[in-house]
Length: 115
Length: 113
Image 1 (tube, each protein chain N blue to C red):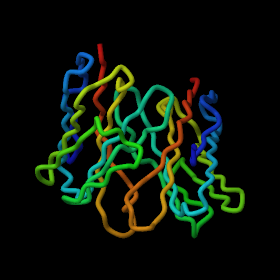
Image 2 (spheres, rainbow over the protein chains, first blue to last red):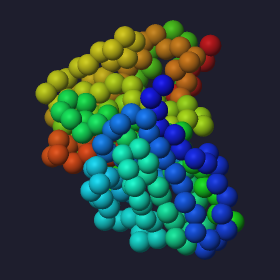
Image 3 (tube, rainbow over the protein chains, first blue to last red):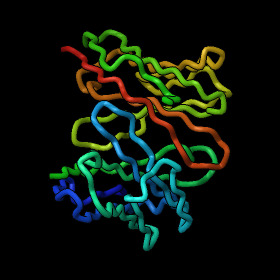
Image 4 (cartoon, each protein chain N blue to C red):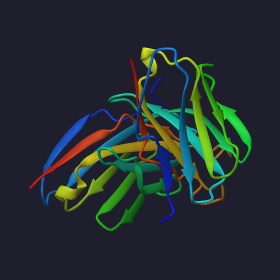
């Protein structure tokens, strides 16, 4: 089945130790997103790729970086995780065509713990 | 500034009755609205959507109503089933070519058998 896969599902890292979260998709969608979601809050968009074009949200901290080496994969790098970065990180994809371009397909998320 | 608001964090409904989940928005540029459903340990899944040119969209047991003048939309589930117990997120976007969707904080629905 076509899907969005996130690895690992649970990640524990130490304060200040770089960590990378990964996302892959078999949907062949040209747009990929990274969201941060903290408890009882709305998913917050960090950035998205439209094909190879990177779009950063204005309030996304510099501590967060992203890479998209090809259509299928996208990575979230947190250079120096702080305790406030503990959250669920959701990857999503969408197909940038007319009609249902707003519909996004989500992975199961990676729960990041910072110790 | 929360542009999409779901003011009810939780809702309990008896099985077989109607569930009504509400959502308000402040950005008048929003012209497309979506509802997502999220089970524990899973990502949100798309449920139903509505364009601003419509005031109602129906898909089986799920109906979304849009009141543009009030900047309000609602999701009706009838009849409610225990498997509908989940967190429901309201989301909105504008069709300015940008793929960005703004989410609400979610409403946790519990359907009691």
